[in-house]
Image 1 (cartoon, rainbow, N blue to C red):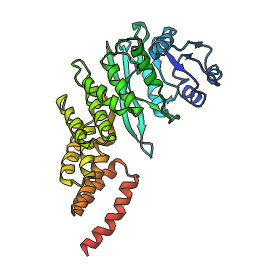
Image 2: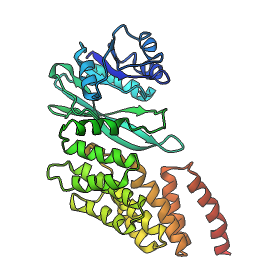
Image 3: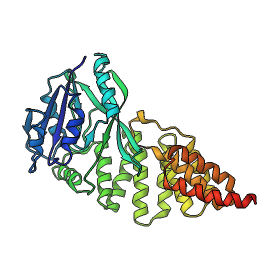
Length: 361
């Protein structure tokens, strides 16, 4: 059986840290907590689970803090979590089984990261992350912000999920400030950092600047395809925010230059046409979406509802608007297979119960 070091960096996480550590305490053989300047009870909570609590002076660099935490690991494999992550019971059981069965030749175990949820708690946004890493390989975090470890070696994809249960909804300039600090110090941004810098500008509603950076990023020859496709979605959103609808669609269509269509793009195009009451065009794009399968192993962000529920429920709307009630009913039923408790599906079901009865009469 392998042994695992859990390595975390934290700051002012008293609301969530106990929840996280209680979910992983019987998985980790060693818990290492690196505090980057908490002023609340974070360190007191950490000390209930481990005596390996270290201070690290914050230097506007997440990778340095994470690498410091990894440097303290002593077990066969190193696991990382954020304080607002949890391992749910089903996944905890799978993780304990993995400890017993993992082949020691495996260098990295990729695990799905569930980060977005609908009103009923169903996962609608997920992607894989490098989660469990062989300690002897000395994997290194890179990038001061949106830090990452480049997956190399013998990689295993697991069905174990890490669940992100965010409690803080407010968005701050922290990430943007780190990027702008790098720029002020003439630290060059690599392709990935250029993309995330543009996203931070967008999140902070600096849409004109974001557009310039996103358009520049899309011309980067060495940029990752998945980032380019997401950049097209972000670019379209920025143009929409400044009321340039003519550039909205062209930004989405540009994604087709880089790879085969993603349902995120096709569904977004469909939603644009339905907003313009152009139902036949919307139907075309929604039908494209439902023919595409999500590829979580691509490493890109995957909006799962865009592959099934959203196109199905909107196909229902389109056909209803066109007067084809039976086809509309069919697509509502298909949407219900994915989200049987959704208000949209249930309201439509009642609507069709009355309309189809009247139609028969």
